[in-house]
Image 1: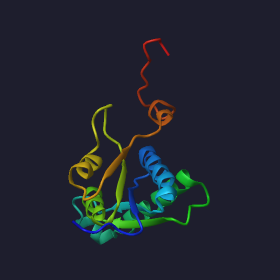
Image 2: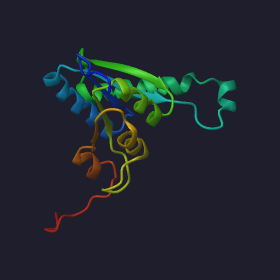
Image 3: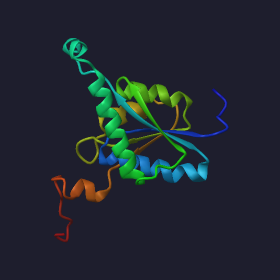
Length: 160
């Protein structure tokens, strides 16, 4: 087993979803007390059937990931992203890259994008199963899952 790092490192998977923004906020709140650095990872890759994309160019995929990462950081922290947060664009399949990144992390945080209340998404499930450090799975805020985005809201037993 490797010796723990002197300066904790939190890796956060960021895809622009409400859950990943909540994961960034959670990492930000943990970083201070832990004295940790937060690495916000936006993973991108060329879709299957890449032959056409090689002719047209793959820069658009990286650019879209960069824009999504910048927007997620602004949504999570406002116009002033804390100095302890380091954005990082990573080419490759998100689950594979985050698992590899967990080798040198103290904590891996991902958002839950699965369907239904008990099912994890494929990336969070893979990370929980294969990461080399503890994994924290963060749900999207309640208002995002039951609010204005058209999600299915359920009434409680008292009809509200």
